[in-house]
Length: 175
Image (cartoon, rainbow, N blue to C red; front, side, top):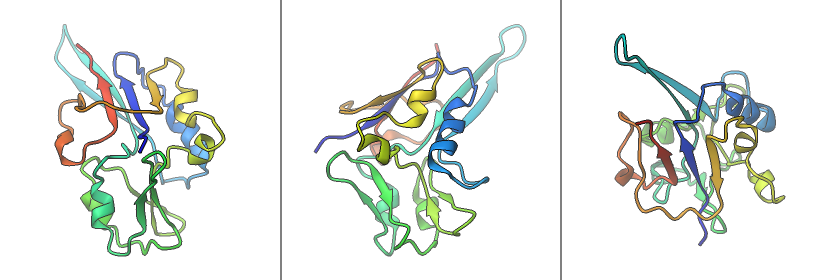
C-alpha cells in the first residue's frame, strides 16, 4: 500500500495562514470547524526571542488512534493511499476519536454535531491535484508527499511521540 504524507518546514513557515484559508475554502468547512490550523509559539527572551509557527492537520497515521477508538467503525484508512477518512453517514458524534488522537486533529462539525477532519483533499488527489493547503503555501513550507516512507518523524517540542501512532508527517525543525 502506498502512503501519502506531509513534510512541513518550520524554517519556512511565516504564519500567514494561507494553508488554513485554502483548506477552509476548498472543503467548505463551517465557521468554527478547522481541519488545518496554525499554532503560534513564542519562546526565549530579549535579546534572543524566538517565534515559531506550526501548520497542523491530520497526519494520516499508519496506526491511527482515531480508527481504533471509533465504536461504530466510521473511521477508516483508504487502502490505495493511506488517507484516513470519517464516514459522516456512520459517525454518531460520540467524540471518542477526538479524545484518542494525540495530535488534537478531529474536530466537531458545528453544523452536523459529528466529527470531521482533514481528508487530504481526496477529491483533489483523485483528480491528480495536490491538497489545497500545499498549493496555497506561499513559502513552500508544506509539501505533500505521495509516497511517504520515513521511519521516524521529527516532531516539534511538546508534540506527542511519533511511536504512538506512526504519523505520516515529518518536520524540518528550526535550529
